[in-house]
Structures are given as C-alpha cells and as structure tokens.
Length: 278
Image 1 (cartoon, one colour):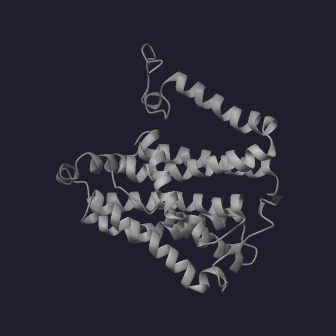
Image 2 (cartoon, rainbow, N blue to C red):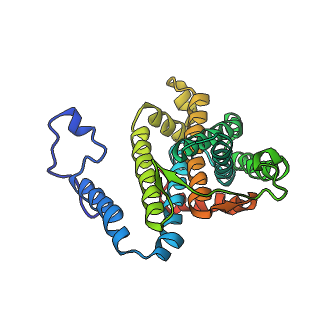
C-alpha cells in the first residue's frame, strides 16, 4: 500500500461512513473520472475507442457483476456468458417488439430478464457449492445456446439466430460515433459501479460476505442463506445482463448465439480472480 489513513480523523458518523473515507482515494477516483470523461475522448482515436476502450468498459461492467456473486458471496459461477446472452436477446426483443422503446429502458429490461434467468440457475446454490455449483451454472450456458438457436421467437424467426439493431438513440441524441458510444458505456459503468459499491456496504452486502466466509455460522446468527444467495445471483445477473446488452447493441450491432460462448464466462471469472475477489 502506497499510503495510509493515519492522521485523517473523522468527527462525525457521516464522515466515517463515506464510500471513500481516505482522502487519497477520493482524489484518485476524481482524477480517474476526469481523465476518462474528458481527456480520453479528446485524445483517443476512433479505432482505439471502438476496438479497445468500449470492449474494456463493457467487460469491466460484467466483471463488477461477477465480483458481486463470486467475490462477495463466494458462489462460483460459470454461466456469465449465458447471462450476457439473455440480457442481449431480452433487450433486443423489447427494443424491436415495443414501438418507440428507448434504448436505456430496453437495456434495463434486458437486465431484468437476465436476473430472472440467474435466479432460476442460482437455485442449485441452496444445496451444492464449489465445483458442483460451477458445473450446475455451466448448464445455463448450454441451455442458453440451445434456446436462442432453436426457439425462433427470440430471434424474430431468423433461421440462424442472427439479429441486428440500428439507429440507436439516447435521449434523442444519435449513438453512432465512437466517442458517443464510449461515453455512454462509461456513464453506465460509473453509475452501476457506484451503486454496487454502496450495495456491498449495506446490510445485504454484509450478509453476502457472511455467507462467503462461513455459511453455517451465518445461518446460526439469523442470516437466511436462501435470500442471501439468490439475491446475489439476482443482482449479479442483472448487471451482467446489462453488460451483455451493451456488448450486443453498442459494440457488435449484429450478433448470433455463438457471440456469447462459454469463453466469456471463463474470461470474466479470470478477470475477477486476477483483479482481486471481493
């Protein structure tokens, strides 16, 4: 650690409960946001934003969701790619089937579809753990591939399952240039990361960490394992579903079920493990 909070005394509960109680953290996060929102769009080329920065932001958002489930609640999951696919196709169906559906509500509804899907495949976490839970969630990947390839309703009756979106707008502004897509993804990442940071500091976040550390002891002190585990699956799947919708709508533009392969599940898990669980 390069610095410590020695000498930074708190004189109120409000100050002690800040998201970033150390002054250096607040300065670093503020500087990072200024660079990301102001400097990068001014200096980065279109290729850099389209090929590197936009995928980086979307995968960062998905990693936030995976970290909630794996890092804070301790439930191993290999179904992240499936949750991304459900979020993408859910948002696509709302966007196409509902006339005049704005982009942001479509993304949120896609995240809700992924949340329901995640709760369904999170039910095995009530009985199994570790490698067995990883295998159970891996089944979600193969089920999603089969579902979007065989059930033509989800893909507007296209034979191959390929779909596409165009003419994206946010609050009446076209989402076409690389800079506008970058800022849109960055804004969503910043908002959801802030909400996730607050969530893990709340009562439910403490329940997740208690289940992660020792679920039997957590149940003894009154924490409901079913509620804690399924809520972690729900929140994690919601965030991953929004990331999947962004990946499909903003980055790809046109995609098919194989665009969300099991490789993405492993990539996201490795990102969280290398970056630091919890």
